[in-house]
Image (cartoon, rainbow, N blue to C red; front, side):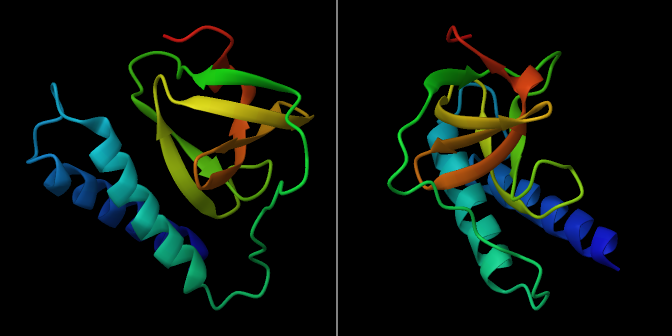
Amino acid sequence: MKKKLIIAAVFSVLCLSCVSCGGDNSGSDQSQSTTSYSAVTDQNANSKSDSSYVPISVEGQTPNSTGYINPPGTKEFVMVMNQPSDQGYMNGSLFAGDEVEIYGRESNWLLIKSGDITGYVEDENISSEKP
């Protein structure tokens, strides 16, 4: 049931992102899509009835370094997860070129923060140079 709910949430969020840019991503203002996507995922996270969802906070911590979202291949965005696994909840998404603060590492996952979004992304999606 969880997988179906997550897939439905991702599909719904992606559709809202397309609506926010008029259905044409080419040359669109990606920050508008990021805002819509983040707002919807925050609503989804807040409405979870599963008591295993725990929001992540890095408040009071100093980042180890900074980097940029740079997904491999033709991916334009990455999902930010609430745990170092693709089996957790999605806290939001970030687009290629978004700057992130890096707070730690767990295996091949980095704990990051960008704006209001905090969570884990796989290290292959982060580079030290802006794409």
